[in-house]
Length: 88
Image (cartoon, rainbow, N blue to C red; front, top):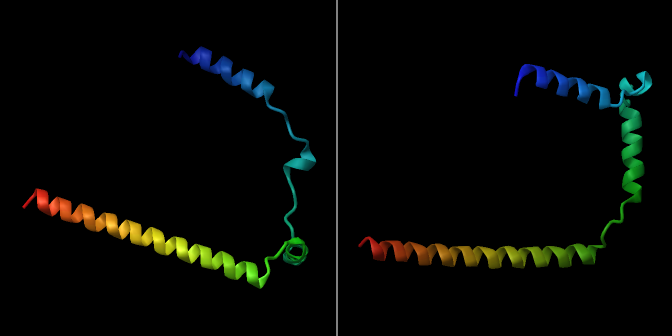
């Protein structure tokens, strides 16, 4: 691609880009108090799970982790023995 073609493409892309208004370019930062107030408001809207739901979800996750761990351990042992058998 020649420099001239590149310049033409750059000019076209500049023309197509929307220009943000001056007020939208520079936004003021939110203060710490305002941030914490908004965090509290959002946390009030959260649908928190019940203790029973948390216990059941935790049980499912622990069982899944144990099963996957046993599966990976069994594969590791099998492939390890296979490699030692091949290179004996």
